[in-house]
Image (cartoon, rainbow, N blue to C red; front, side, top):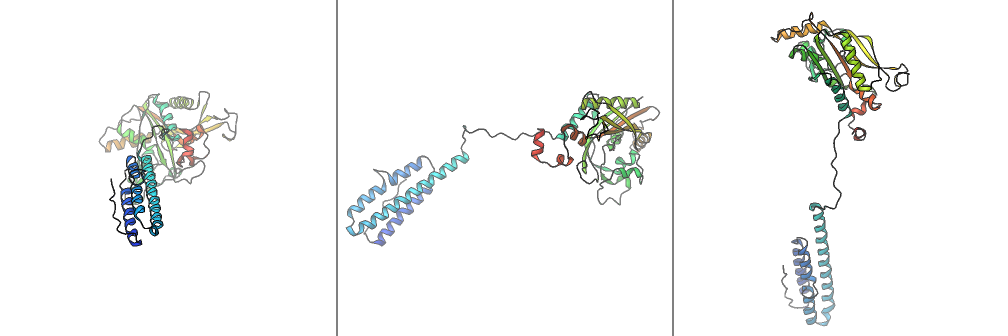
Length: 371
Ligand code: PHE
């Protein structure tokens, strides 16, 4: 790196302007080529160095030969050139530092901790419920969230236009009117259609838990969300009785909420079970004495259940025949029970969550509390 020493022919202003402009342009061009570190120091020495520096050499030579009246003007120009070169140097130094911060590796800095993901409280609760049944020998079944009217209603003994359909306010897929009713698509309102799908695929005996997302046209409030989750259960075999249902659910509730929890069964109605029951557990907050959480009753309603209605087995047999499969759900030989529970409510109880909307907000400040 070197700058040519310009020739100074005379000391008039025009010639000084020309020569110093040339020196400035040379310095600026060199500064643009600097690559940091050693090149900065070489640049500094070349222009400003005490012994070999160009500025020192030029000022010594020119000031000596300049006429007296030209000396002040020459001095001012040297000072200005020196200041310009110093600021070019400073600029290059700063750029060099910024560059090494961006690309360099400073091993003394604390490490950047990666943000570790965690299970959503709903997923965690669902896995816990499923686990309880898996340990009793149940396997896991899944089905689609977009269902046909047949699986969601008809095969489950909700006939077309039957008032039982009004209990599950349904979100339907648009533009289905030209299809026969049973083929029309909707968002499944419960996980029960997977009972039918499973029985079409498999012959008895059957023990299945079915976790999943369901949808209803409910207005959102603290306890309702148009999207929520259920875990369904289905057990079909010879000689399955209501006492099997009671024993299974009593065990499951104790496994989920603690061995002190009691269960009780109330007559209820579902089109696909007969008899049907609602299951209550003794209040996990007050132990059954009565508190605000259980509305001072000592009990909390948690799930629906019942013995599989023979009409369901018949619908399955009929569809199996249509599909060329053996109609093996013989209502004279086999029986079964089914149950369904809301995962959101159970998660809210377990974790003390007051508003179901929080589970769907995606708010990390909320979710981090369960990590
Ligand atoms: N599918 C019912 C509901 O969503 C619950 C249920 C499942 C009831 C299985 C009985 C048997 O309300």
